[in-house]
Image 1: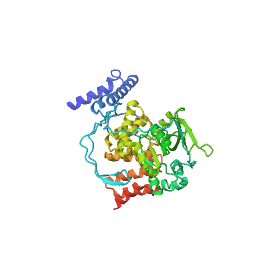
Image 2 (image 1 turned 90 degrees about the vertical axis):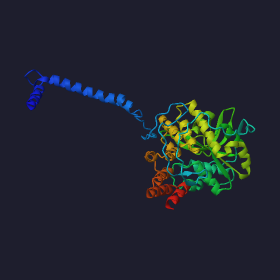
Image 3 (image 1 turned 90 degrees about the horizontal axis):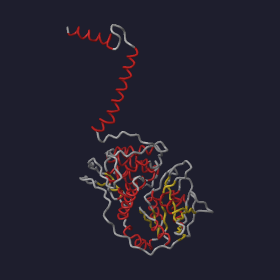
Image 4 (image 1 turned 180 degrees about the horizontal axis):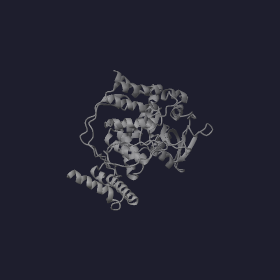
Length: 454
């Protein structure tokens, strides 16, 4: 009986529920039913995605990331919510226990160290521990122009070697940009020369000394060149010709307070008959900020005490890096939508081993469509992710960068670091070999390869 009732009921639905009694199916009503059912289903999915799921999964983030000019979108997947513009930044997830990872020392060598397990995430406050004040020297003159530098117009992709050759010419060291490039970037396609590589060249091949500092300011630059210290700065440059943004070195040769201008020898834009380029303090500083206001000072050893006295606390590298954190923090407070300021904050935090906070700062920086070539020149995000045990994210970021160029040896070095931490010696060796194929003089990769093989 129950089976017959079921069959009868089904027959009733098929034959009469959506059509005329005792007749066939009404096509118009059937179409109305189908359309209504489809719309109800779509509305249900939207409600589920936008209302129900965010309540159940509060960290769910459904959004579309915009690609840069090269169709590559760099997104640091930090598993942390978006940080507001407030200067206090605390990731919500508990930090991982770090595995042994090789960490660069201030001398550029590599040591295999074990980071302690993090028990509490440090909070980035608006008042980092104070650093000693820098002594106030006699003010520099209102204007100055440095003589005695031989201009070198760079060949393609060669601003680092060309500027180093210019800087050394002041000290009557007559080398060409090909001479310096032979050490700095043996492969012509190498996209980047770091400040540390420039310093290493000075120390290995000359009797001069060199230092690299972050968070410089115009007053420091003016004092240094007016006292005939040679200063090379690292800045961003966008030629506005469709090529896009690049990193660029320049040698500072003069300034004029009355005009509010600074003058550099520009190896790319300058020519033998007009080597210098003059622009306003504001534009110079804007471009310089894009590389955390890095500057290199090259000097004779006999003048080290004079330079140290001028720099004061910043003569110590750690204190300089702490100052860089303070400067970047002030700048993100003043302009929370300045992606370069956030990136500089991450880089400065990496320099003092505050890696969790650095990851958050870098994550904020990626919200502001920074140039994709940033990862050709600045590698703090790789270090921050590595030191916080976000190994898969390091690989993702290196893969994204390799889509734009394969001529950055540091990318292969960081891939090797990941595989080394994971205990995959063969893969690590392959990556370190790839880095050294691009630049056999890359001391960090040399040390890493010896470490794994030994």
